[in-house]
Image (cartoon, rainbow, N blue to C red; front, side, top):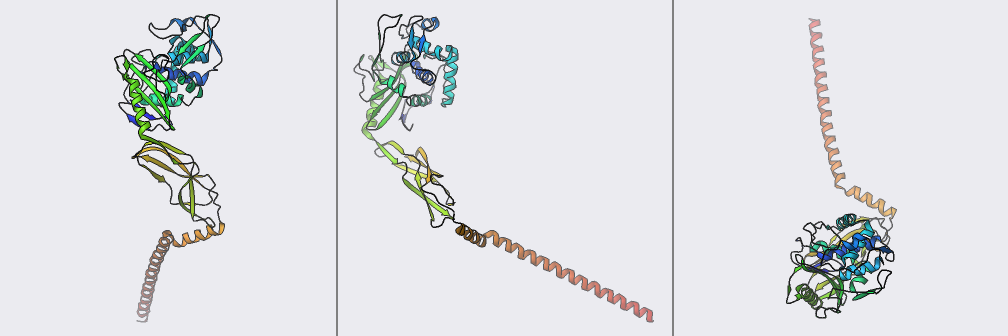
Length: 404
């Protein structure tokens, strides 16, 4: 289980979220993301023999007929609402040329998203021991997919009509099998604040769901895997409902800081009149928090900055914590321009030079060198005097000898 703030990714509850699980048809969230990134929604796709025939017995399908033409958009609805494997296969072939190549796209995109404990072997979610993920990895995928407007529109709708085609005389009504969003098949699972996203089931994977809900400015994402079904009730739905209800009742949305708010200051040197550099928040920070949670922060700033400084120049950062756990950071930027004052700069340089410990050290070293040189000079002078005295003595002795 993993419950988090959809917008910030802050985890509100976690249980074994890093353990390997089988995603079943939650896999199609990745399939949809790649198709949305690479395909034109209104482009017609002609069904191949392989796409409609390679559907395992028991899998959901739209009943697509070979050579039938459907749009990418229609196929996406069929895949995400009813887990139609024929629609999924057709989208994979359309996007990459073959299912095998599409799987390479899936694993490449997973790496880009940081899904380090995930591996895909097919686009539908058909069980395979080598086809696995974790709740943590799936959260990265879902939050990315939910940033796409078309994806959000599809996963929250109750049903979708695919008009008749040249191969199908009647229209197809695709009903969303996510009972959290749609009450057309079961009303007891319906949750009025739900906004999506996808359910899955297999005998091995059991019930799993990626569910989202919004209320009072709070946007939540819940991921539940390996959930049991008891008395025809999938516990994944009731677990999500209970978690969502608890958060909506006990948590609030709090704007920690608004973009442009003045929130810090540090010293500035070499500016004409300013001694303090005023800093503002580069972006807004909002979190959902328990009513009793405490938010703190830590600044990463130098004690003083030298002018010039440009308006909105990044000077440092501030990291926010909720009950000691990091919930994100923002840049601290200069509120205005701080111009360099040449006179102040020169005076400060002179003061810095005069008061610099290196200056005193240099003076001390110079004095020591002078003393040593002076001592050396005196030693040399004394030696010269002694040598001169010796020469005079020798000269005197020589004269005495000559006189005798």
